[in-house]
Image (cartoon, rainbow, N blue to C red; front, side, top):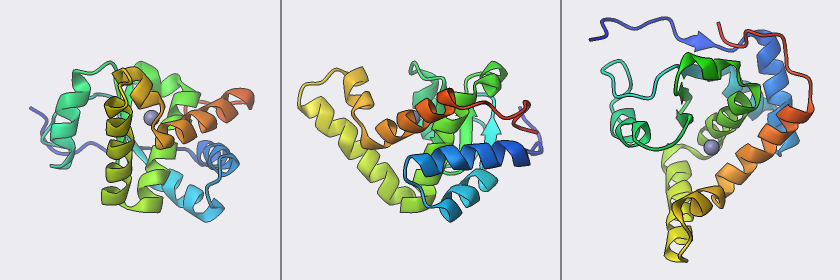
Length: 159
Ligand SMILES: [Zn+2]
């Protein structure tokens, strides 16, 4: 069992600046983008843990069993293994979700995200297609593409 909290990993100044520019490129207000990336933390496992916020645990229980490499809950990014810390486009993708929570508030973000997914499924889309059609995922993928086209900041991005 985990005892006590570890020091959470935060983005370096250089990574914050680069990530914020990717978020601005997909429409985020510069102030909101800067605040979101500054507040983001990363965990390198997707698992229930007493160390995480209570509302994260049921979501992580489901996510741990789904084919996902990362999930963002509020300002916390959960990655499936430390190897994904070295994936800059994925980092930017998850930071978009941090900014979406910050922009909309948790209930509104989660409601829209869930409603988009369910409406896709009710149209008859397979889960993967319904997931890809979620508007918040489209925005995250757009920022991921921007990150791919630009030079990465110097690694490590989290410390
Ligand atoms: Zn996503």
